[in-house]
Image (cartoon, rainbow, N blue to C red; front, side):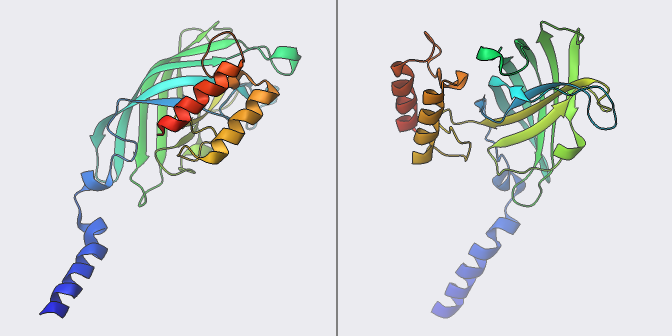
Length: 233
């Protein structure tokens, strides 16, 4: 009798992931609303790609936040609302890149296959660029063909979207995001390597290192980061 119960318990543990209702396997990015933070190598590009002939800019750093909220759980895919997009592409000091100085705002949706059984993902965003340049009005961005499969485990996000399906010309965005502000190396947790990664950026004078957003890069940013790190994810 004891052996039978032991075998039954083992089988139950092994089969549980396959017999549980889909909500138990879903919500890989949480119910939300959850703030996500853009991290390197998130980037902004203008120009042409694919078979087009015009130049394509280098990927300039893009930073900011957005909010993710669960809409519904499907059989293999979960659907989320993206709101409060607040991204900037700053003019780089020293002339080391394109002086875009662009702000992006808007909302959209994000869909992702339920981990670990499905890896597809899709993001659609309606964004307004300021200043608009040639991209006036609300621009619709969709996941590019190359970014249709998830390359990082949830709840991390690594997606590429563009406002042109042909790349002749358009704007292309890479969105690398974590919901943990102290997750500086975007591995999904606040760990010791995040401290070293932040200090390296702080010493290098990168714009991201202005962690508290006040008075530029100061020692206060280091303490603000450490407070966030100790708070955990």
